[in-house]
Length: 439
Image 1 (cartoon, rainbow, N blue to C red):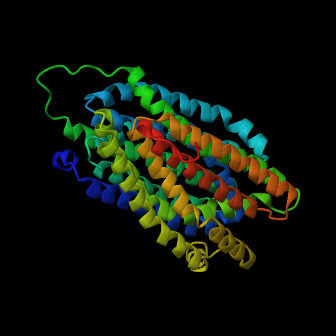
Image 2: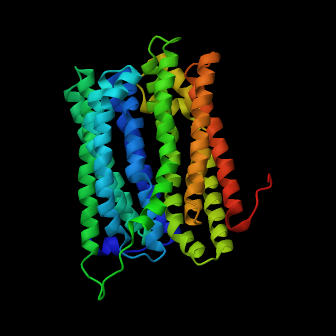
């Protein structure tokens, strides 16, 4: 295992490894939806998806900024940064879990779905486990080794799929218990994957330096991880607001608003996110490639590498989006066969409307990582918050004042992510003294 964790890969090799891990993870997650939808139905999937925005918010605050932030510190020469980060995020992750447990009842009341409360409480310990695991992933990514991240991602999904399907089937006659048990499987999967991540980390720590490393201050760690967390939290926060506003607004015109939201968020978004997961590796692998150049003042070369990463992302995402549009009926039929005829038609429509997000989300993902590497971690936060507000506001207006119903969510997402891409591109051009054409 020591050889496995010590090996450093080239940019493309590292990107391929982490992309493969992310894609396998997403495929497993998508396949997981087949038996899950069969057991839970569209209403159960709606409950499942209504829990996730709060989880993602707290997970983002306590974990999402860590891999890229620690990766940049390690790749820029701050040895031992992960040790301070482990202590810091032990506390932050624990607080995140407590907050999710405490917020369960108010969230259930706001969404008008009582089953959400017990589901949130069962999922809450996962916030703590992922927080610590993210530090270990960032440590290895900073050293240019993407394999531990890929392996822990795949292990998460495998455990969740096996354990979740088993528990959902056992509790199939009680919808609340079935949904709650699938979320308990998520908590178990994160705990076991954390154990694997620490096994990788311990196997690399066999030799100690001859001198004591200077500790990286908590201030330096937070200087990189907090802006990244603020960037990432905008998406789940907008999804939480969307789940409350959309479901309540849809109830005025639809018989089962929870089911409609489940078809969009739990089914259509799952399909569209598959190609986005492939380009995730390009974003993660770009940090240790670009950060040292930017840290040494070679901004021109750093930006050249950033543009190269974006072009590779575009080359992968464009054909993926076209394939999603063309093969939407086939994907819907294979993955979500249990949906009724009308629900299946709606799913195909939603996938085709949001297929463009395979391009825009991929570009936002890569460009945000590039901005972090260029020393501007706060810029993606501005982008995500602006577009998150736009997305929720536009969705609310369209649902309230048009006949688009649940397709309003898809249209709003398309517009918001396009704005995010344009803002990030502008920030990259301005990095190091450049100017946007619009200025």
